[in-house]
Length: 199
Image (cartoon, rainbow, N blue to C red; front, side, top):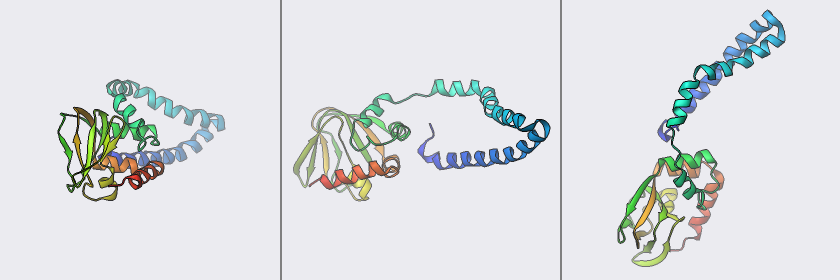
């Protein structure tokens, strides 16, 4: 549920809590052993986490009830070669970062030579890829475009135009790069896919 921009701070906070728990444990365990022996220490320390959860259970249930899971976007991304190897939480993070975009037939989606600012997964419809005015290929549901410019940090290498009305999942640069480059198998797939492209 943590936005990508806050992830580093959230992980630092979690690490700080872990250190604090170690410190608290190193103080409590000797005291509990002195009071009631090893059994008291084990029971006392083991009871801390369940007690904390019980005191915050109402809030946790509210958070859980309010959380929405982008099931359709996750299913689309899971079907794609580029994202198939991503663990569930990373796949959900990139699905949450995406926005749905509906376009009409004839809409130019990206233009060759422009800044690469996002990746597009095709949820429905057909698009045409052209390079230097020459038709290179068509893409449909379960395929995507934009990875070359993002992963190679270059301008768009081709133009893409919707042939039919289409629905796309648009993922901004930061979320895409973090997800794909943060997982070795996905990065390997992305490199292989880029190497297969011939424009």
